[in-house]
Image (cartoon, rainbow, N blue to C red; front, side, top):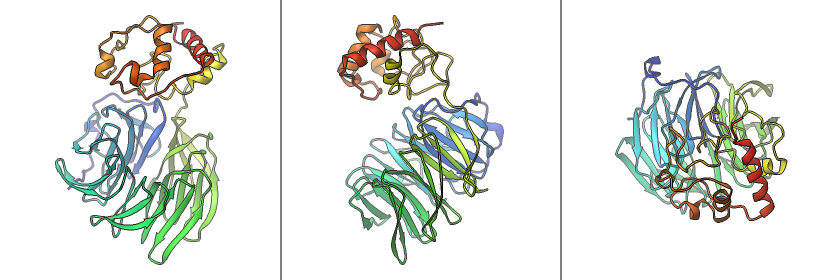
Length: 403
């Protein structure tokens, strides 16, 4: 049984980190003693109910893509590294337990308080009773993208457009569209789809909420309210019983990747701008938010800054910035690859056989990281426009130099 008792601050011996994520917030879960968020920066940050950061755990080796508040106490996190970490309710520098077995990234988590269910890019749903003790369930043709614990059992949604009920694997629905989010209803399940709709599968049949035209990527349900977030940055609040839109929470216009209701009804949101926000869903008013990323210094090449936007989710320009998924770039030119102290490089980059200069940076983005430095964890990005390449290098030359 995976259930954690409440642990006091005894486990908080690691350093606190109060500034928030260094990149997009990809996952969020809210429990009775606070919240946990996970990001592209590979961190799980634990928060008080009032939104103050308690501690950041940098344990995962890859983006954190899924978080779960386990009924009865504690959190579970998972992501690109294929591992599931079990944490105490108020956080710790390292997990209490680790569940390993997926052959690829883990993209979804759910729990009924007795077992933890996980779904991954390997197409499996796994029901865990403890480390090394899992049922491996197959049926989806492709990645499992969402999970929910319902009164009938665990429901999974997949990129193949199907909903399945486990442990038997019964097909509950075939939408013909990828399932992007799930949330349990008292007698059914709500499924968010890539066309921007939410389907309510209940005992009496299926209803549809027309949220919008862009994919739903996060959902949460509490006390008759359904919150749905999408790639456009808005969060729609519905009375799902009456199928009535109550209001829309307006954010920064960037994707909202994660949602969670607190026991007091507060709605937490996190997304591409790396900011966690707390809202009153009944009034639509924001309550608090974590600090946003610092603006770029003035005087930098504007075209280079435009190209840099694709890099800033993973890299900071200054050494004193919060940790991110990639190493900081201060004094990049003339620096040996793999040489930033304290950064956990992939084996390929740790060799240090490349010196970063205008030519090697240009080759990195001409060939792509997968060809220029095979084995790196850096996402594949290429620049084919010579003007964009020149602008990026001008930008980096000035932005990464020590003041």
